[in-house]
Figure 1 (tube, rainbow, N blue to C red):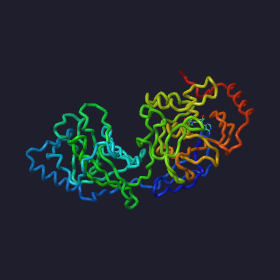
Figure 2 (cartoon, rainbow, N blue to C red):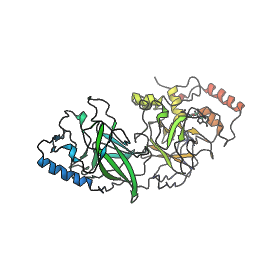
Figure 3 (cartoon, helix red, strand yellow):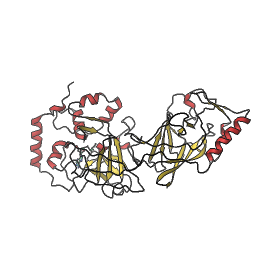
Figure 4 (cartoon, rainbow, N blue to C red):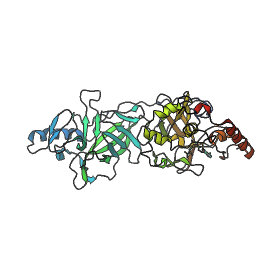
Length: 453
Ligand SMILES: C[S@@+](CC[C@H](N)C(=O)[O-])C[C@H]1O[C@@H](n2cnc3c(N)ncnc32)[C@H](O)[C@@H]1O
């Protein structure tokens, strides 16, 4: 796969914040012609101040104090891990509370085992908040969400729940750590009674508000009431501001694409900018989900692994079972019948990164178009080990997104096995194809990739 874009400084649209991509002025290189450029983000990944603009937070905690002291019949709200106890009838902790809503309606806030994923209403991934207080908006990038409520507060259960599986949705502020005053959005599905059951649930939603001082601004409505009445939860409004880290276009989990076990098929991938689906050109391809402006970052992806001809099998061995499964969903063009499929997959999908080739599960789905026909450029962020893809031009919804693998049609045929018909190149003749095939068969498989097993 090619690497290194010939775009110069790309300035992202305000509407679609993304890093400035400082690209090499070199010609795009074929994936086998190693070379890489790095991306520097002009944005800061700063911690943003958060305020509770509606004052709901402080009211809430005043209420806790008041209720704690006067409560006789209150539930015991005990935090399991450090045995800190807060008393108060949880249901009354609401201050600015919406009407109970269906648990699953309009939900944009999801939780998985202490990790909370926040999405914009349009489905765009905002970030992940972990139960150790960290939050992440992009690979190795982070945001912090400052405490909406100025009072330390620990996650609690309502006393009826005897295990960690049934902690209600709450907020946690870590005291005495770097995360002091950091709001952790903590959720668990209290509607499920069974222990160890899949707790992925949706218990709130996030609404994007107009940016303030260039920072993204959200209203997050959280369910705070453990008591789910007739499948409804009560919710509390909070307002947070997230720094514009600008690495906003992520894969669905914010880190790297889901593995095969999560994606029933590659077609399950849709990050709000591109989706993978069957291509009229060949196999799978990447397609614009909606109209895309030029220089829109559409994918930031972390590599599955990097390998060279000598350590490929060792690197493959180090993958998890799921990763291997995902790897084998990629297309591999065998240059000869004897070529090992694992090597063929690597060779077909690798991007020249560093000294070897890196494989990316989603990036590998882009088909090729020659210079002038490719509508997407990409570059590699060395520090983050991420490939960043951005549109070169306006792309209309539903159009296929193409990158450029190389400029030589003979090479495209010998390496990837297709005769380019993008219209931007001379293509190759039948005779040339036959000659290349004869020569491939004569060469046998690529010796440098022969498995030692
Ligand atoms: C990196 S994969 C691209 C994704 C692939 N289509 C899939 O289904 O996963 C490279 C392979 O896609 C196909 N391909 C890519 N661009 C093509 C094009 N312009 N015309 C025909 N086939 C193409 C070739 O089979 C090539 O070996």
